[in-house]
Image 1 (spheres, rainbow over the protein chains, first blue to last red):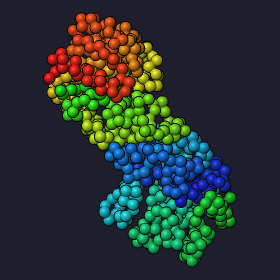
Image 2: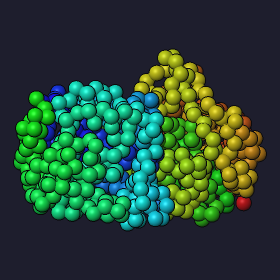
Image 3: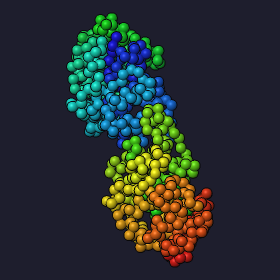
Image 4: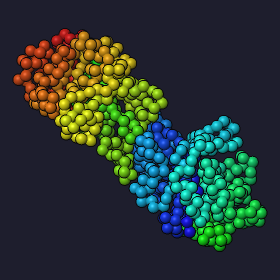
Length: 312
Length: 312
């Protein structure tokens, strides 16, 4: 089964890791959100690409959800003594990736080419694609005005009340090479349990993506469990956007796109309402506490999709 | 006594450290070569400014002559695994300075302002000035063609035969703020024991510098001792440029500028020839093996200058 997975950061990376443990590398493509990329310290930083890449390389820090586990902090400590901005935490090893990527971008290489090269050096065999080689920047419209995503997410700790989102550049952003081909050639599109508003929506706004995905069998995994997000501001965003945060709200959010949605046992009572939206619900334990749980959840999602004859 | 010192890297930094141990901070200005600054990994790196700053801050690595003593290497190790360029060694803490400086330069701050701020955070009280806020880049003309200075110096380990030097941008480079004022207000100009060709000549080519310095009492310390440079390619450069490397050659190089020159006891036989150039020689042990030696040499140079009634 050929799968194209849409993913953001931590939750997405976990399910991608599960899928990578089941599928052959040539049968899995991960299309990654770049809307929360940003420029910092003169570097272009791609948090979701990094989380996916580090996770697939076995280098991710399981404690933080970002950065590497084998990290040292001399750079940031020294930057602080020099009076530099330290609100965004960058370890010494993590920094090497940002510097090398930025160096190659400044030399004119597309992000997709750089990502492929970095994955190769880290032994990542699965195809990891940025959603676009053009810059898309998620802007959070809040009651305190517009904030760049990282400013909202890290510097402001998701505190301002959200009124909406804008994906700057997405109107002119073309899918990166192989993105459309991988979706077109996939038997199944997987919507990873990433934040619908700021992780997967940016991917869906890239030119032509929504239409291409709408024509394919697809299965999502709800990032909202028991009314809460396991990590990050997804539930808070749903509430501030006027929706009760729930697996049902996730289903509704993707109504015109999803064929099936995996929801947690905690949300089993929503199955009928989700089915009423034309989305087939599948109930299981969706909390990926360890690698075995990632593999199991990925397998269950693939099995359910196959069972629905969505895919070969 | 108010002193303006012209300095490049290691040897210059040692004498500057000696001067800083004797003079009041407000009486010493160090004008630093920026000709060997370069762009690397998307960063602007200023090796001589760094060596001077780290030395005055007590952070310099005495083993290498560059970088910091309290260093870690996670960044460079990781950059290597990612296939990035590692020919120029940058430690994790050193990198923080390059990143912070580059960040501020990209934001439009002049190098002199950034240098002042960095010195303040590191507790450096002496005034350290880049020779210019405009870019000057030393190009080494070799028998293998033109090479950027760091390419020649680090990547090629000074191997190519030197035919000449070019200081790109020096024709339009203006002295940084306070540079001319500090020379004008100085009782004595000190030519530190830095490479004449690639450390002090770039400073002298900045617009108006040579004329301003020529009108002032000045004393140099020869970087050539017993026909050799203590560190770096100065002796090799003299030979390849057609001069026998010696303290006399150094005197001749600065003939129209220097009032006095401190030479090593190993070169005592050259005193008459140096005097014949109109430069007053002073013979002593010039090898600064420890801090006491830096202080002693600096004191002897200042005393000799005072004795010559060059300065108050």
